[in-house]
View 1 (cartoon, rainbow, N blue to C red):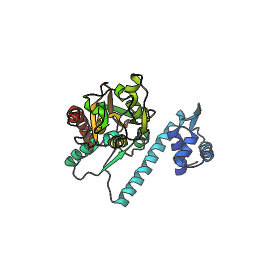
View 2 (cartoon, helix red, strand yellow):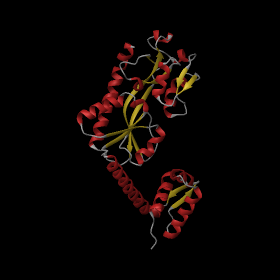
View 3 (cartoon, one colour):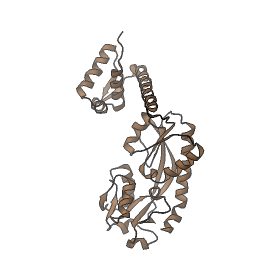
View 4 (cartoon, helix red, strand yellow):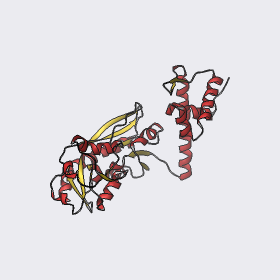
Length: 308
């Protein structure tokens, strides 16, 4: 009876995850023809059709569902073994791993970590900073238990839960003429050099929303990839920006003036996890603290802006 090798399991899993031969080849850093030949050879040697070809995609066949279930379990075991060996090599025991969007990681995540550390003094914490396009792989490969994101992740394999709702605000360099106003409208910003994030990015699209709704063009003089970069550019007098209030949720921000955006535009924050995964008690406690700190940032926002 034919047996599957670890290499065949690795390739089948890659095709299963990406849905294409080219995607699997990129994931494994090998040639697409080699992947195609190995999939064909595996199906022939096992006498089982592993994939249905539909509209250019490789979809796991119904009759091979038990095989794929075992492939997942085998590969999970291999990953667990690799993580265990890595932990032994580094002398570490990673017991809580999660990730955050850059906007939340800037200030909110640090406050959450203070509370988690106060509760669990010996807990090792692995905090990653992710963009939205990196989230699905992070969760499905179980590199961490959950991710805090400012956008929903549209994937059937994950669960989104809204844990906070903030507002968009305006940030200005100290001494800017608009800093004299109590609120600032997108109409006030239309003629200003703006620092922003690419509106094709999900986070950038949220920041562009009030301009689009007002029928105004985005006048980006420069763009950054992360909220932290945008704040730094504004601090150095290189433009003004619309940003979410969690990215500037700090009492003291020298060089930056915060003002409410006249247009009431809300931005949600989500905790995203792999569907069916049971979170550890550490993870549950951490999510509770994110709820608390995000809610406090919304509540304190007007007070902090009045101080700047």
